[in-house]
View 1 (cartoon, rainbow, N blue to C red):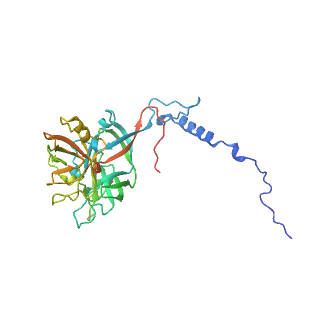
View 2: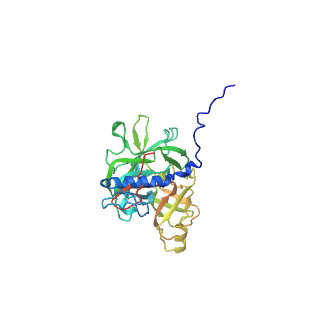
View 3: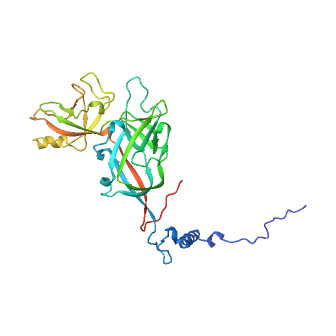
Length: 331
């Protein structure tokens, strides 16, 4: 019988070969070698050991700043009827602008439900919402037909009677060149129409002004400033009295009557529910409040919970100072 020779039987086995090389130490040495090789690039590495390379004077590092954009803190000049929310970065960032930004990152957030008239397709029929940041250079972003432009595209993954969940298709925007200084951010929201163009979203207002009407029980409020109950109910009822199709949570602020106890009840931070629209498109009532003993009308601010928009955004910036030297990469 012939025997087949094992071609590897003349190789001396090595015991515990993987222990002879510490890959972490190898990586550290390679990082130090690259940092020492070319100081003109402005990059160097400090690993907390005695032989690490100190940063040069013009060293560049990476730093992240997180800002929280809440519609409750938007600029009063925001044109929400055309999908616009304005913010001052200085007000959000301890009176400091954001300089040399190279990347933005955005996560999922809830957006108010908008309803078309009865018999029409869903407002979010195409399951897409687009955000344009108009304070960025026109060359940064995605360009579409008819001069349309956007920076983030969202999938409308959840649709309820009061809100939709927007999830970014791509959560990170990389700039071709650093944005030198950002002092303001203006966001505009759009939905696609049946012709392939983008229509601005008429965002329901989350902030109204009203007057508490003396002598009413249940307590009634008259909306002022030219606004109507359409911000609470869409489509708004046309026959009165009417009740909300779904509960509408409202939060009152600055209701200051002579009755301190009543003020505390109205201004409760946990909110109250609108229970009816008794007479017209400007009036709503709250059954848990009683203004029968109120002698004068009282102005106040009204916040509508379902219309709140809030999201966190990460700004990645270049710094000419020592940082952790972590660099963003495409994944």
